Image (cartoon, rainbow, N blue to C red; front, side, top):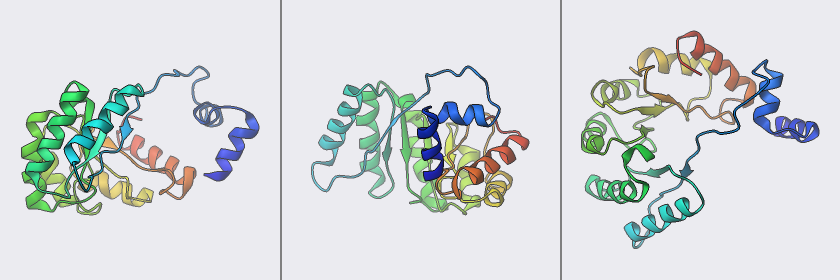
Length: 201
């Protein structure tokens, strides 16, 4: 990743443009992309008030969407956090939640059922990254998008995720991290593999 960073600095181009040109992408690119503010970790004291202040700071910075953490405390507390963030962001469609692999099959299904009425943007990292059975069970019943893939490192693991996790190409989100995937070449192998298997880039 450091080499790609050096290359774009030498070329004096933004990374997205450098990659598009290098990889045969469109010559004109839309400079507007969807972004979100990530945060919402648990605070040791005054959690709800401090979470609300954090989301307000996101909004003040111009973000309209955010992702917060869930799964490390009681589900009722997480639901209160979700409700507060949704209220500030103008609805669940502007909020994603990341459980950081906190759930097993039983607790994952319980959490999915509980957060379902909030109609969240997505529900990420529900269970252990290789617990495809739990992920498939949640995806089979949870209507809103789920996101997965961040802790998987190779094209072989991406293929297993696609084959066994029950993810739905019409709504679910793959969140592979180029740094985790042995750098950009490994990441691009995953992108090609999944495009060949019917996922939209």
